[in-house]
Length: 284
Ligand SMILES: O=P(O)(O)O[C@H]1[C@H](O)[C@@H](O)[C@H](O)[C@H](O)[C@@H]1O
Ligand SMILES: [Mg+2]
Image (cartoon, rainbow, N blue to C red):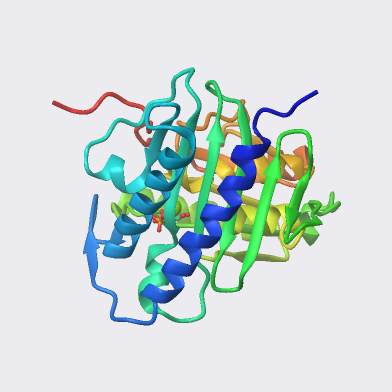
């Protein structure tokens, strides 16, 4: 049977490479940083420009009105962040802008993916453009890094696991206290280590390749994780909400892990704090 999304998947990979080259080039010049929702929520002209390049390339290829778009920088400027039945590209032009602005050897990512209906991700692409690694997954067809199949870790022992978390962009003391309390409790299970690369996309690819057992975060956005969701799933991993319930892309809460045993053990220690949904109606 013909695969209706193969062309879009292949095109997503090509656009990711093109955008990644733009980001690498931009990293050679001075990077001026601006802020969004808080003083630690950063954006650069490169984020904005690359998002425009991606969206215009997709419109040129598939038609002006064929698909919808949710882009990190468009939403920051007031565009809606709502999924409908229409195929929707979810775009994070530079995931890890804080790493990008240092111009040092941390990773930052370009990601995009296609969602079809509310919780049904068709494919995802994460291009780690500094190390030139292309992660991708297509529903039912496996996950790959540079065309080599990837697989989550088979570790079942939490005491031998490595766990990733991030701190988000909200520095209110009560939230930071919960984040650190959770990390302390997880470290003391004990686990082998705690890590954090500074980008949700990279973190999820690390789960997918088996480099770590799990990544969780409260406060992430759909564009940080949408591509990673299918990459982790197709690599054999699982996604859950931080309360152990079903994963919800718009909830801004996620646990991704190699298996349910590891995910549920971490979930026992997570101190949940409230965050607004990505698709919450805009405040008047
Ligand atoms: O796309 P940007 O650069 O905003 O990336 C975000 C990361 O992906 C989060 O995990 C991380 O916790 C931060 O929220 C960070 O902002
Ligand atoms: Mg991001």
